Length: 108
Image (cartoon, rainbow, N blue to C red; front, side):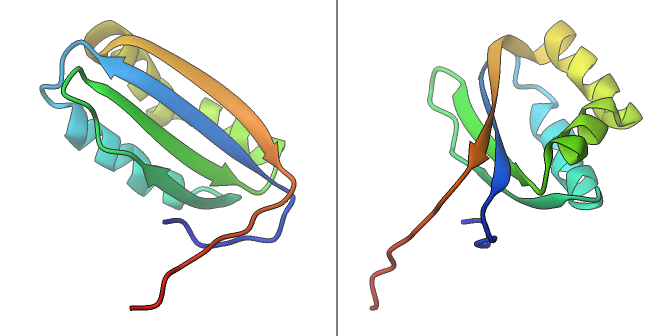
């Protein structure tokens, strides 16, 4: 789970279905490593892919400008093109402003 941050901040919700998984995890791991180095990056959470190849990754950002710079980052832009050409059957990206959050954690 991502660290809690003071709202408001932004969530980039990326849902996708893979057509080809060969080499995908290496690229995805590199993108997380690269995103962590970007100014304004707050964290990331991913759900395991289903047997049909569907998965969701949510990255968290300080502001819209940080998201814009991440989208334009050269290695990320190349990975986006590679994703469309080689990996994804489909994807959807949503950007949402997080106004409030709360959580629960059971003590063991």
